[in-house]
Length: 253
Image (spheres, one colour):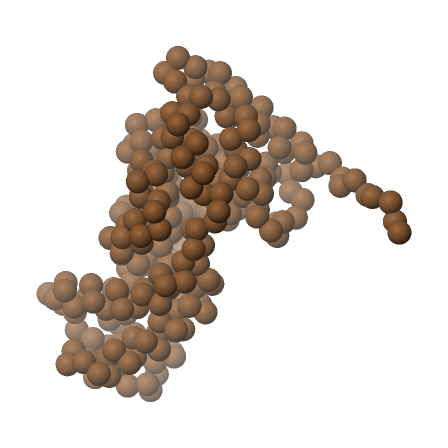
């Protein structure tokens, strides 16, 4: 899944939210004086990676009283996220790779830091809309456990729900801190997906398409765990070594 940068899309969401508040009976007395300052004050994550829920941020930004009114908070969050979800797309290699992994016997999960701690239920609906829910065994949002990647609890939760050992897992992600350092901290293997070459040459194993993971991963069964782990180790080692090699220079014209 991919979405536009959150600051850009959230600006549109704020504008839409402002129109909603100023035209409904549950407008909480918010005016535009100090609105930008309140937005800036909420635009950060906890240093210890605890989730800061979206509903609480929006009630402070727009100065509304959602206490004891879960329906109101749900409406607030849905209104805000609608502009972001409208721009979501799925990379072309995602569905074929997930389907191939399922055929080979692998269990798969989506483990995600939702923007601004947006509610897990909204993201499950979005993942369903994108046609991915039926293709994975588990969806874990930071809101499910109260911790964002790279904190250990979100990965440990996924491991527990999938009923696997950490060393049997391969995490694929595009953020070095969230998706590489975090999983390594709990003993999971991880590989960087760098679709645009933005990370440059590194000492990490890197792929440029999800389909690359299918080349060497064997068909999984209860009887070949050792073989699968050995092949995965060889795959990661070879990719890391390839990253260190200088690119071949073609003839100059």
